[in-house]
Image (cartoon, rainbow, N blue to C red; front, side):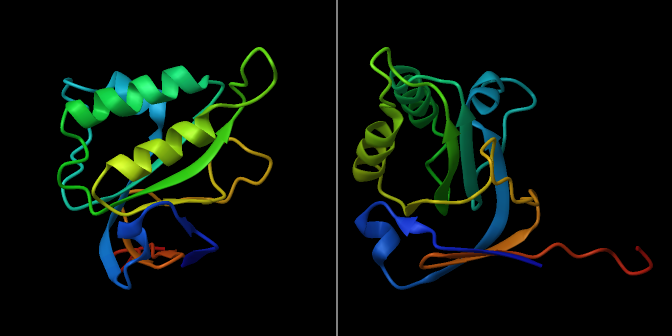
Length: 151
């Protein structure tokens, strides 16, 4: 069992007191985008979606989130949890993706959180994907179980 503390709500939907239970899926934003309209596209219905990124500038993060939204990837998602976004600073050294993620969270009508210490940053917590997870106001708890007889 792995518990991630300190998730921060990014919109009003994420501040409503509730508990969401669903499989945890996701990964790198660019990899997720490249799977759109292919046999490998993720099935996001009734899932908690984790997104992280490395080395992409803000305008590109915005473009990919809009494309995924227009492709319907977020229609039946239970929640989105942003992990680490590393690199991708603008020419002046500032990253624009924090504002892009805030704008995205404000326009989408589902709970969006940030602050999951997983991705490509200095702290890389293991994140079991495809397993049942419980998301409670700032707490993401993912449980990985082995089938009977497994080790």
